[in-house]
Amino acid sequence: MNGIEKRVERHKRKEKRMRWHIDHLLAHARLAAVFFRESIQKEEQEIAEAFLEAGFSFIPHFGSGDSRCVSHLFYSQDAEPFHTILKNLHMQQML
Image (cartoon, rainbow, N blue to C red):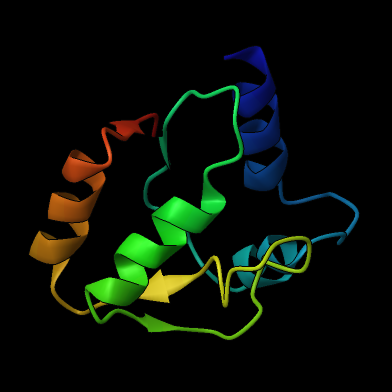
């Protein structure tokens, strides 16, 4: 899990090169939690589709420039469906 830990540490830093969408978002937001699932395959599509199917709001193209996903940033005012999806996808909380 060393790769994910390094990536999260980079995103948590205040001083960094603004490279990805998330860097610009985190300049104005607080990182509350990080969830992950270890895999040797790319699974962004499956995860994004789960949030879309549940009716979450999203920012088009956020973080998904290199995939077919409509977004990698989803939002809901209700935390319960969010946690249900994470559980169903066997996601683990890191932070």
